[in-house]
Length: 346
Image (cartoon, rainbow, N blue to C red; front, side, top):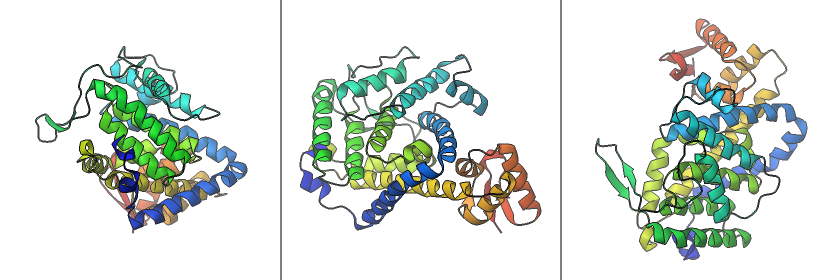
């Protein structure tokens, strides 16, 4: 809510470099309908891959991790639960699927947020669908000890601040008072500062992000895992939030560290989307498509997960086969081994 009180102070000093990134994102959004008409099969494959990656990564940010086979079994509903981690996975799956299936997106409301929260915790017996009933804190264990790094408003304040935040955000969005992604950044910053539920605030914030992206036509959230990109830059995620929350209670904070981070994540997601589309135009064999991607489209340094994101219809075995062949031919090199190996062109 604090970010939407003095709108001129909050949004009036947007960093210049942010404009170029927002323009690239909007260009990518404009191309999506063309791709949807021309390449529906490829986009369907991308959406399947992104769904699994999003559920896995959003939980991994909270240190809820399953191995690959169990994660896929929980995501597709074929495996019974063995432990709480798997129940957490299923909750995010259900909440994410529910918002992706929506035909028409309504303005955000407290009842809808609590509905998502109820889905998120429905398998673990938590207090899903309710606001917090006692004070909670944002803590860090980085030094080996528990350290409070931010104190959110207490439960009574949260009951007032959350609906006010959503009302102010919806009004600002309707009046187009800033770029929609800038407004979204301010919304998520305030939501996480209020910390309105006892458990699951981070995952709920990522669900809200996906909901708002889709509601405003940024369909990249269907085809590229935003959560995976956040997980891959987790240190920057927490650092930017911490920086933007300083002075929040007194309305002296700056939304730009956090909002700039979020825009970079989305800009990168559209770059990934463009690479996937370019790779999908290849008419050769699957091995040839992997070769073309590695030699001509991959970043200077990459991991196998980036190839899988770009070519979701190609099996890990085929990718490994091509990588080993290119390495034997001294066209690429690697540091490390296994899924975490870093590859580069020679």
